[in-house]
Each structure stands twice: as C-alpha cells, then as structure tokens.
Image 1 (cartoon, chains in turn red, orange):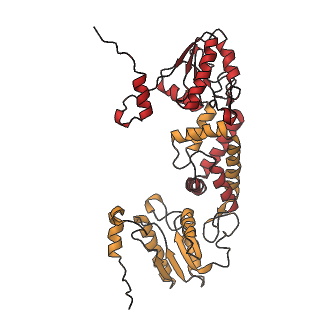
Image 2 (tube, rainbow over the protein chains, first blue to last red):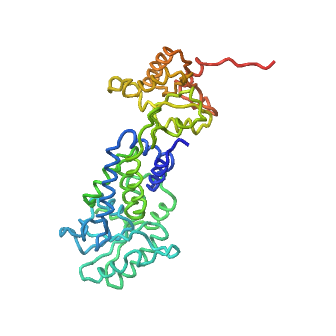
Image 3 (cartoon, rainbow over the protein chains, first blue to last red):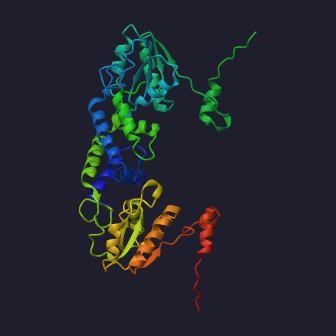
Length: 202
Length: 202
C-alpha cells in the first residue's frame, strides 16, 4: 500500500469529521500536505484552543468561552423569553433569522430513554430552576418536528405549565416561498390540519 | 453574533480544508465540540505528526516518512519502468488498479509558466538524473489530459528520447463500461481518432 503509517493515522482521524469518508479524507490530507501546511498548522492551533477554552454557558448551555455566553450576558435581550432548542446550530439558525430577541436553552439532544438520554442529560434541572425564577414569562418550544422532538416538547410544556408560564411551539407548515408540489405529505397534512383563520379587511 | 471568537477562528481554520465552506465548517466544529472531543484530539495529534514527519521520497517525490517511499524501497518492483504522474493521489489511484509494478515519479503539479511553475518546480532535474541511470528503460506518461498536462507530457517525452528511452502515454478514450451516450464530445472525438486495429481470429 502506498499510504505511510502516519498518513493512515491522519486519514482515520479526519474521518472523525462529519460527512468525511475515505475519498474526502484522502483529498483533505493530500491537500494539506502538498499545498497548505500553514493551513494545517492553523487547524491544529484553532482546534486545540477551542477544545481547551470553549465550554458551555452555565445558563443556557450554548458554547461559551466565559461563564455566560454572549446572548445570556447581553442585557438588551429579553430575559423573559426562553426558546428551547436541541443544538447550538439551532441557536445560530434562529439568530440568523434576526427576529428573536429573547434567550435560549440548548438541550444538546432530545429525550430518548432507550439511549439513556433523560431530563438530566438534557440539563432540564438547570432549565427548571430558570422557569421558577420569576423572570421567565414564556417558554418557546423549538425542538425538532420528530417523534422524539415532539415528546421532548410535550415534557417541557408540562413542566412550564406547572410554573404557570405561557408555553408556545414554533409554527410548522409549508416553507415560505415553498411550492406545494414539492412539499412532503407529512408537512402538507400538518399545514392543512393546523390552518389558521384569515382576517378579512372591511 | 452567537459565535465566540475562538469558534470563529476554528471555522476559518476548517475552511482551509478543500470542499469545506461556511456551512460544513460549522457542522464540523459543532460536531467535534458537542460530541467528539476525543476525535478532535485525534485530529490534532495525527495532523501534527504528519506535518512533522511526512516529507517527500528523495527518488520519486511521493509522500514518505523515510528517505525512500515504500514503492521505491521495494526490491520486487520493476525499477526499469517510471510512471510520471501529477499528484500523490494519482499514485494511489494507479496502485489501486493493481496492474502496475514499476516505479513512479510525482511532479506535484504540471508545467504552467504563467504561474511560475517550470521544470525545476516539478523536480525534473531529479527525474532526469534517473532517466540516464542505465536502469530506467521506459517512461510512462500519466499526466492529466488537459492542455497543461499534455504540454508537460510532451516536454518529458523529448527529455526521455534524448536518453534513448522508450516513451509511452497512458490510453485515453471511452471508460470501460461507459455508455457512449454519456461520454463527453472531446473524449469521444479522441476515441475515434485514436482507434486501434482489432485482431480477428482465424
């Protein structure tokens, strides 16, 4: 085989990256070794610093370098709204929409008893202490529209109601600009069942 | 913005990888930080070791951890055949075909005067010393079928002929199992021009 032992180690290590298989790990390794050794050094440094210094916000479990993340530490955000999402990537997606000015809570997963993922693994005790802090008014459920995501939402909704909070779920339906023809049956069926009244102008 | 400074550094560093843009760098970074910190450590270690200890074979310019690569150091390979390729990935591809038992020479590029890539950058002096060593019998040209690849081949062919060596070029044409309908016009036109006589059985 034409791969040296260290090259084999490198290919195997690069396959830890999501979406990277044998072909692309080879492409990445060869590119770095042939043409971008400086870039490889940069990856080593950035990854090392990230592993060492990026942890979770103690309040919302988003990635943070300090005790509180930038959102939880921002006094201009509405601390009364808490939007529950499954992953840090969900926070980024909602932030990019630009419409939300409340806080988040990142579960880092969803309820899945068979995999040993219960409320404790999702940080629910931390969330619950915030639900009863007298500041939170509304819990917005933005978990995924999967069986486990819905179960997680249902569980959190009942918790929030025990604390007398308003509970909402993000809207599901046909994407804006989406053509009905290309929307899957499950989404369409939900969109019809969950139709909303139209206000007519007088 | 919800990205911390170190996270921004990491995303920028991951974009040094070929084929990795903003979306996939985020996916990779979040995956490693959320779910595979051990994998991230493994990438750091493997990349560091590779940068430090993988260099080029002094004879053929393939990646090697020692002075000679595994192929050049293998006495069972036919030292009289030298196959010239552009990249280490080409060596891997030919090795995987399993049919070739000679040596290689890796140009790590192709002639491109406008980009300042001449014979010296491609290691041609090293190759030329081997063409005149009395061991090499045949130079097999396996550079790419592009304008620059063809120019590189033409240049190396004249060098090899000066040393009285046999010079061959790998065959180009319709891929095995390829349907004519889906083959591009350039390949088809070459396949027809370069048609070979068929031996009829008697």
